[in-house]
Image (cartoon, rainbow, N blue to C red; front, top):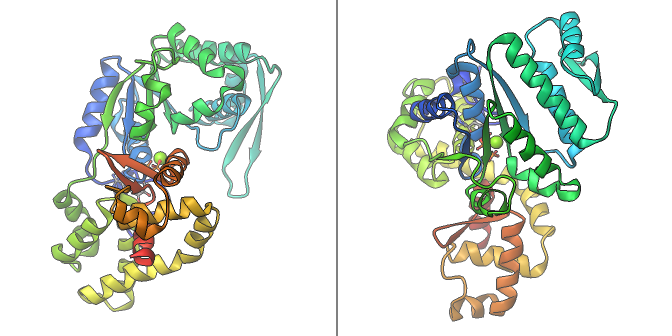
Length: 373
Ligand SMILES: Nc1ncnc2c1ncn2[C@@H]1O[C@H](COP(=O)(O)OP(=O)(O)OP(=O)(O)O)[C@@H](O)[C@H]1O
Ligand SMILES: [Mg+2]
């Protein structure tokens, strides 16, 4: 089996390093602090939480719940998601679990459904659409659960910034109200660095102002990641070639895993030959090629000034976008470029770090470099 995983988050045997981060999260949780984990895209935030919940946290002391807010579009959706995950994570088998759920919550009924893959799913049917009542029900239920089990509750909200898109019914204020009302529950939030600076956490009038400590997830150091990769390749990828991949991707874990996944496949086909630079280059360019149609589609969804702005970021390597030379080369005015850059930033197509813009999706950035330069 291919030991590299790039399509889903990693935990268990496929999880590399991050010992310090796991220790730090543990420390903060035991010291009753909430924590906001942030990084660039695809650096391993979700994997880190899952690993923490599966392997690091003391399961005799804590009950853990993981909620992904990514696809959530309104607060009722959010509430249903929360109920569903609580149901999924209770320890009993399904008969007892339905009974237990009935004891814990009064604003919802559950039906248990067996999915095509054999997994059990619990679907919540709400009997109230009053958000305050629903939050109260969830928190009362969690408190009961905590008392019954003698364990503290830890909740992870992945992609927490989504909450600020669900403004319409002031659900965020209600959520903060219940977070404050039940101070024994601990929280792990994740997002990008920009979300730390965005209104949710940094504005004094935001319901989530000052709610947590912070942990920046940096790339896994090259030497540590090489040990992980080298073991899986059984020494068939030299450090120099690995370094090339690492430097090109700037340590983005997903892309490194994806390249390694394809390289591993080739070593199997080639009867375990040592990998050389031609093979590595071939895999990297085939990977970009295979995503070409998708990236072209992405570009076609942009307006002309936005396409130009994207090009400006690529050709100027993210800095000094507005030089006369650049504006002339791109045949664009400063204000039009500025507006387009702001749109790309708002839509998270580009991001910014110490005054340098970059394309958030590393693979897309490499593809654009190939196309535009
Ligand atoms: N500790 C790790 N060891 C090995 N690979 C990892 C690790 N963490 C993440 N990865 C790789 O990176 C990919 C992305 O990880 P993950 O989804 O956890 O990142 P993320 O920061 O949550 O991404 P996003 O910004 O999209 O939310 C995984 O599919 C896996 O290939
Ligand atoms: Mg994630």
